[in-house]
Image (cartoon, rainbow, N blue to C red; front, side, top):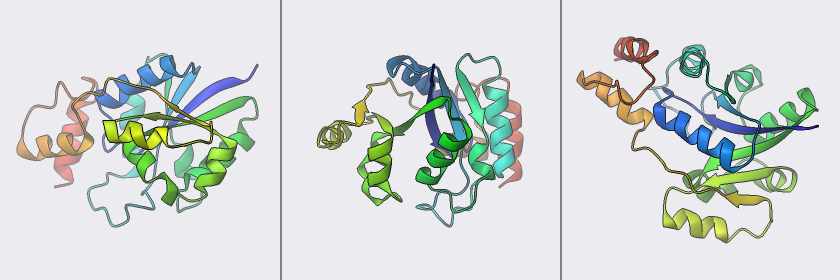
Length: 196
């Protein structure tokens, strides 16, 4: 029987409680066996970032944060693929390396609105299921306009937390205890303080 895997990519700079809560909801709502939080290298559409922590450190934080979390896995798979990192290439490599798995792409409504600019976007829609979690009413309308039959909307409760907020809190010396899993909070503080 094919294992159903959701691919939830991101920089996870750093991973936070919102990512984990969302992954739990998407796994349940989309009927997935597992969600792989795919730690991504530099996004081809976001070149020139200077606040991105080293790839392996972001992966380490994700692994520590997800320790013991049923059905949610930190993955460094994409970090070992040729650059630039395109979702189409990642999905094709995953399909070849894990023939017993069925992969579904999980993306936010904000990413869906720019999806037409993604490398081989039409091929992704033709060959893979896409689950979109809207962040706004505009996102819902944008997804509803798709007529490929390959896109599903999953309404998820999104926590008011972002990686940008966490980096700002660290730089301001504010408490991040409610924003990230307790097991990684001291390490997040230290790593992002060193980055200043």
